[in-house]
Image 1: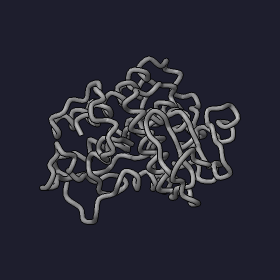
Image 2: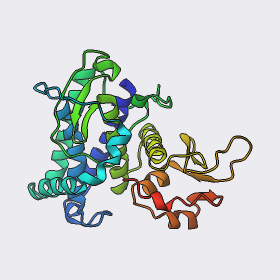
Image 3: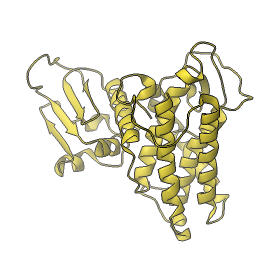
Image 4: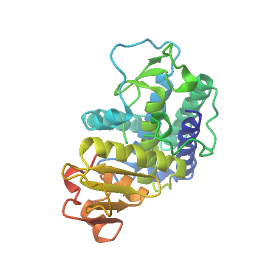
Length: 291
């Protein structure tokens, strides 16, 4: 949990610094996402941070029902896509040309302060310690989330252990699981803005998206490798037990994130070598995009 807090904070700060360097005219330009301006995209990143602040609000109240996992949260982003876009566009339209810079910085600062206050953990540069384990709170989060949640602590586990349950746009979640989704979103939209992700944040995003792929296409017929961060078995079919797998897909973490998020077409990535696929079951385009 402490490492994950630092990872999310560092990735947010990368975006804040890059956005701060943009000229005023950039915010009205179309972004790489159809129908989104750069300003709208920046507002969406700000909303992702706002959701954390609101989830940790002192006045939060508990909710019933079992907590949602990070995989389940991401799987439901499609149903919330229109509301997410409307929120971002409304925020973008409500600020002046220079507004996105200060708004983003303020929302990120507030979210980091709320996390530090609740967890006792700084949100500076992550050290990488603990990232690489398979625990949910060490792995991290697409693109999703509009502000509006509230939250409450759970007696067992405690904030430092990531056992606190907060209310998010996708339902009640353990704080660590919610932060995994924030990391995915910060990586995806950072790339949308041309910002290279930090290695720890990229690792968290790659692992969570691989888990989402395994949930979306369960099975053991294809070995999906995202070196150096993770490998999972997916797709229904004959199980591989020994030797070289008959169906292998290998892709670097950045193109993997882009393919999963629908920013890079599968066939284009295969054609230029960013995805290396072998075997009759290795064509994964039918499950893409995941987000």
